[in-house]
Image (tube, rainbow, N blue to C red; front, side, top):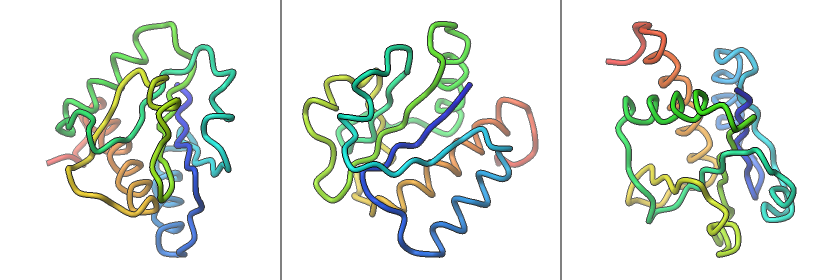
Length: 138
């Protein structure tokens, strides 16, 4: 399954970029991070994408539940990609939120968008370790 983290901002700090790149390597290119000017424009023609918006009001999941969520989406057979949408300083607009298949909250706390990308890609990596019964998750 093709997974993309769509960011309506830029990864600026080198230490965030290095962390994200490390997990991309570990995931063998399975996850791409794409910086865009306008998320709404980017998702306009995405017909078979499962859209997960990162929202403070969304549902919090444990790492195991998150892994199972990814597995369920992949096993559905309808979707050809999973898009995780992360807004910039102003968050996601209401039109984007309405297109969400699932609203995910990583915490009730607010994170910098760069931190959110790093935390999310680490959780995706952890999810695949859980699903493959590999000894990363404790």
